[in-house]
Length: 99
Image (cartoon, rainbow, N blue to C red):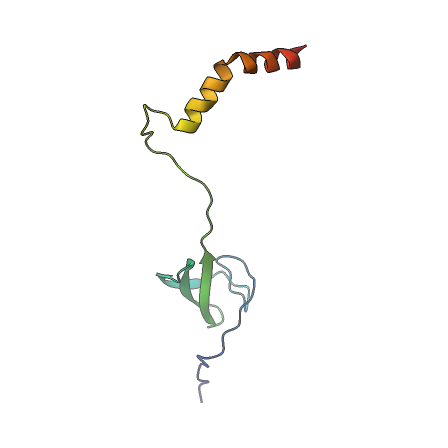
């Protein structure tokens, strides 16, 4: 008699992306990507041992990629930085460090 899957028992384990956390095999068949609010996950089935699970990814802010500068080609922060670098005060500080 074939064992029935216990759908209510979910075990959370740390692991390695693309590697079965049960047998250590790398033969995972992935399902479609699914949104889980704060990230996403893929369902998987291991071809080596038959285990099934979800590979979960959390979404955390990493960085911005600016594809267009809307203020004369520069952001205000860049403009202020340029103004400071061109200022006499910055030149005094630079000369002090060069001595």
